Amino acid sequence: MTVHIGARPGEIAETVLMPGDPLRAKWAAETFLDNPVCVNEVRGMLGFTGTWRGHRVTIHGSGMGMPSLSIYANELIRDYGAQTLIRIGSAGAMQDAVRLRDIVLAMTSSTLSTPSRGMFRELNYAPCADFGLLQAAHAAAQAKAITTHVGGIYSSDVFYDERPDLNEQMMRHGILAVEMEAAELYTLAARYGRRALAVLTISDHLVTGEALPSEDRQSSFSDMVEIALKAAFA
Image (cartoon, rainbow, N blue to C red):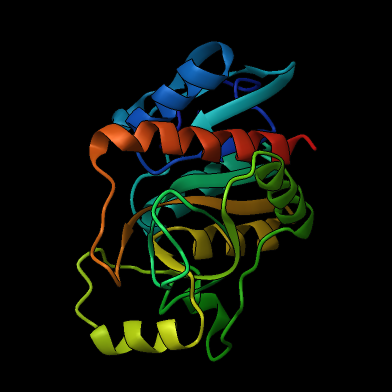
């Protein structure tokens, strides 16, 4: 057990999928895993371990934002031996070519700050995905004929952003989408020598103002989870 995770030794798999929402972790575990068992519910942050096609998998919530994800990812890696961590979550599109329900695979993640910022001091560290996971996820998406975009994203440390000037520059420089966790996940994976990837579903659009209604999100998110699982065990 750790401060934030109540799982006993051996109850966390080496492969962990991390949605932000703990209830999405429950839904994904019950939908995709065989014999899922709840291994954590400390502070309402749910985690489940089961199997997918014979492979042990844990699906554990990260909470919203990089500070929250940093807590869980650190403990999953340091105390439970997680080797592969894949964020599965929603994102807001920042390019006209990226549409609702499309999948974005984050090759890199730009950010203003992360919980790891202090240790780099003057260095602008560039966190990136594991190439093997990225390649496998892209192949899995192509096999399902899902419209997929690979490139840079923006990990914001605020949800209610009031920097239209910054958004304009990111769009100008080809940033595909915005979310709130991937940059810290990639940084931690690099620090500990682990594999990490963010597989994101576009749920809303910063350019057009479109957004998926809640009833349409579950079917779209199913593709994302399947892609993440196939990438982990390619």
